[in-house]
Length: 394
Ligand SMILES: *Cc1c(COP(=O)(O)O)cnc(C)c1O
Image (cartoon, rainbow, N blue to C red; front, side, top):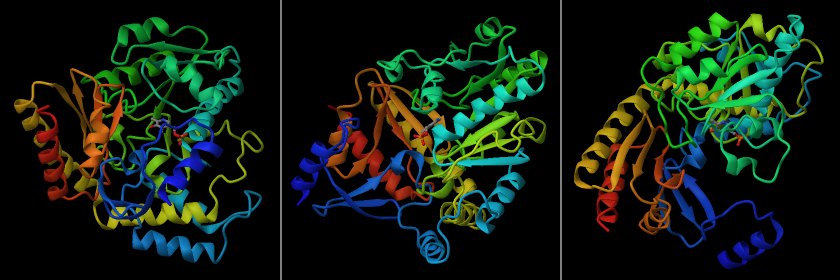
């Protein structure tokens, strides 16, 4: 059965994904089982998505109930779950308004469109440029890949959109020089995830904020990977004492159901008037009910505090590991967004760890990324560390 599924998939699905030869069938909290009955501890979480673990009973129940009541009606009408979710997001953040889409890329598309529209409405149509960071990742649609600072993502899709420029992350002088009369915004991730778990230098984000204020630019933070408690605060920017004008969320927002959200202050969001932007599926009752329940569970069970504590424990363990293994060049990250950069290719280790029952993933070729569900237990971390200890000796 397993081989048939893999062969069929390889024949009928576009070959865009390089997959490991397993068929995942079932999950429970931080554990996954494949069709051969093998079990894995999940340090990937569907790439920082299933923050409350797999098959959470409360989310399963809410989704089933909402599916039996109302799945979709379009944004021609008000619905209760969408309204409640937006209210909760506004209450929990700097933002005054929310636009819902279905993915991270769509949230970033909305942010890019809003930044341009804001300056059009302000009578400065020449300001449409956005300065982004090298090694950034903002998505795969035409606008978001144009904002992404990695050539491999753009290969074959020329011409990319006009108006995006790039500076090295953490280089405030380069940013200053890149800003000109056409610039409308600076867009960046507080911590670069796909870029290799790159943290901002002390004061960097604050200096970006100051620069935006001085030059009258919007600061767009892509918190699609860093948001929703992943880094030990609800949003990563809280740790760096900055407030953006626009923030994007997706990944963990509904614990696995597809959703994206663009949040903005009233001043900026005012540029999104009637008809300015839309999405058929954006904020359906089904998905927003799941997101609302996710936020409630996070509050009730103090998941953010837990991610911070467990993250400290995990990072300390990784630092201990570094003392024993010369191949570890650096341990990076915050909360449960952690990575170890090796001084050699790291992608070969992923199937080795998988054979031993641990799912991890590799970014930038040399960095192992650890993004387990935020409910991961210390003994599960201990088991991974023990396994890494064995594997890294080779
Ligand atoms: C995953 C990710 C995206 C893209 O999200 P999709 O849902 O795949 O479109 C954008 N930005 C960051 C920082 C991400 O991690």
